[in-house]
Image (tube, rainbow, N blue to C red; front, side, top):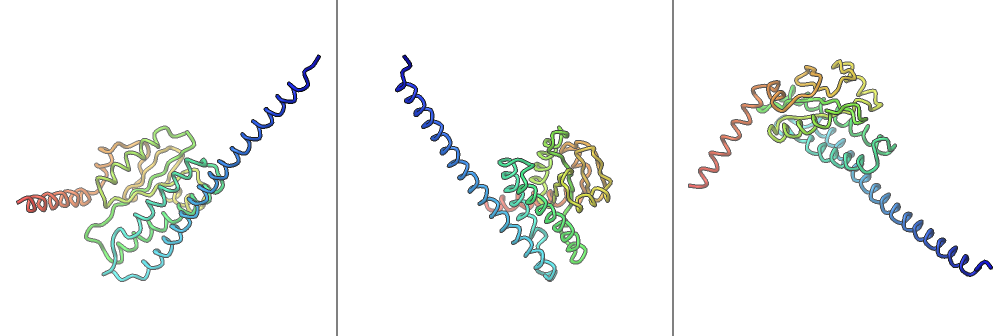
Length: 233
């Protein structure tokens, strides 16, 4: 005879396990959504703050200009966006939207920085690198190039690197690709308005940088060493 109680017990136990797993999944999913929403809100606030800075810098007098007033904030937003993209994936609609907004801020920062240099001059003129990459898996050397540029920025504080996703559906990015003649051959770098295709090591990039940038770093290192020597006496 079929043990009805045994099957009922098995059914109830299975249903209980399923319900527990379902509610646990819903709970952690809800927590994850809340976490992502918080990151999105923080990025949105940072973006609004940066846009306000753009308006302020347009009106500022040359005596009050700092040659790195906005770029550090952009770097922080970029780090938050990278973490969000890693968590949610590059095709997530919210990530794509934020990425487009951030890309426009990068372009505005690049144009504004160049205008401020033209308007006010600079004792330490920043050097600009525009970097085009792809994260679709079709550019095996793009990630490695990103590490190289990070190392270069650490060595040369006046260096400003603007990174753009080649595949981002944004007319402003398309315009930049046309201006600098960027094709699908990646990674691609624009240094002082000259385009270079293919991976470049730290040593190769240093050869392409202006001598003034290297001289400023050498002077800064000498000044730091001299100050340290005086303090130790």
